[in-house]
Amino acid sequence: MSLSPRITQLVDAFRCLPGVGPKSAQRMALHLLERNRRGGVTLSKALAIAMEEVKHCQICRNFAEQEHCEICLNPSRDNSKLCIVESPIDVIAFEQTGGYHGSYFVLMGHLSPLDGIGPDDIGIDLLVDRVMHEEIKEIILATNPTVEGDATAHYIAEAINNVVALSIEVETDKNRSQVDITRIAHGVPVGGEIEYVDSGTLAHALSGRKKM
Image 1: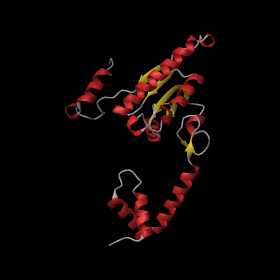
Image 2: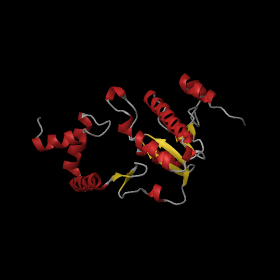
Image 3: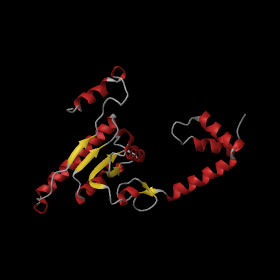
């Protein structure tokens, strides 16, 4: 059976979501039309409002409805620590731990030359400018433990080290302190068994070991 143009358009719209193929998109579209039209209307209104009103924080680039997000406006946050992540969902993950109280910078991606994504596309220039104008003592590189994530972390570390070293050489910046750059540890997951952990993860766990 062929679908009408309007239904086909709705199915195609659902396919923009990650992990949603033709069958899943068709199932969701037909479910809303058949059983939950009120929910479909609510969904469409919420999407329209979010697409129009949700922007990027001018400080950390996280999602926000105002110029600055709630985290950046919170006076109790430790702004001497800056955690760099790839995505807003990573911010949510760190916040849910309850163990980090510093600030963030969201790259909205990672370096990927094959896809044409360079330093300017992920805001490296904005990040460096922020480091130079704020009293940041530690930068935590929390990009994903992937080839692209590691390459992005190394690029950021080198860029920041170079610009900080250059500023220290300038006479007006003689008293500037070096910025500590750290990388989050990658190792054996809590509750996991070593025999099932891949060799790359075990290697990271060994290199990141600490005294007890």
